[in-house]
Image 1: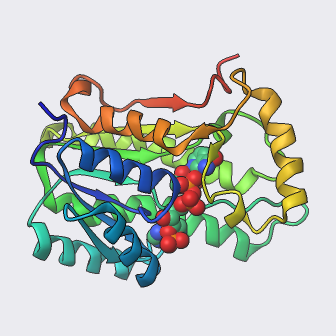
Image 2: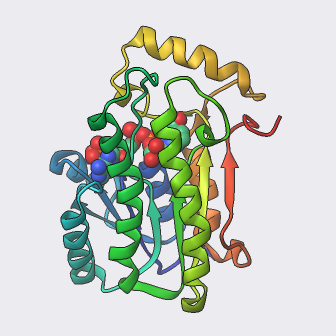
Length: 249
Ligand SMILES: NC(=O)c1ccc[n+]([C@@H]2O[C@H](COP(=O)([O-])OP(=O)(O)OC[C@H]3O[C@@H](n4cnc5c(N)ncnc54)[C@H](OP(=O)(O)O)[C@@H]3O)[C@@H](O)[C@H]2O)c1
């Protein structure tokens, strides 16, 4: 029996990296998947790659109005959502002296505001027994240079895990999070760092990972699928680290 047979899943930020790998895994487990992204061309290309059980909707997770429109479009397309993976996001890294208001707003808009209003918008469509998974980060567990705003934003999402889970219990919707460590994806390219800066950043990160390698997006996807499925039926309000042991030692 496939783990997500006949389930409808919505994955925000499904055009690349962890979201795309999760879409592949969900479909392999029998789900129909709707992915989002900000760009029509990459959404269309991803849907084509994923095949007939995939749909795509362009929606900017940092924009509340677009999230409301997303809910309307999802309702028209599938009528309900069984699994919501709130994954859309990216990082920018600045030392405290360099942080300015646009940097703060940009990161908090996509990660904090985006997560809260994605859940709020999609909640009326969530089926009883459904599962919501939030994307946090191992960055919250350490003092990583340049990550004050990104870590604070992901820490806010960690806080949502507990409050949202408490509030959703009566609706029989489970809510948990997956916290990735350093993962191979477009994440580091999209930080705006050049290759030398990325190399410097990762040379600080990697020695802290006991498994001494980056994780694969597909390795994060497996944990998301577990939380999406009934295999995790007694898990609620918690966080799974997929980080090669980075924050455990
Ligand atoms: N890679 C890591 O080391 C790592 C570690 C911990 C946590 N994370 C988190 O994992 C999540 C996925 O990142 P990734 O590593 O898979 O990076 P990625 O390959 O760059 O993928 C990011 C995805 O999010 C989408 N996205 C970004 N901003 C969006 C917005 N405002 N609205 C809608 N979609 C948006 C992107 O689509 P478009 O660009 O097409 O809009 C893309 O599909 C992020 O929340 C990130 O913070 C990553």
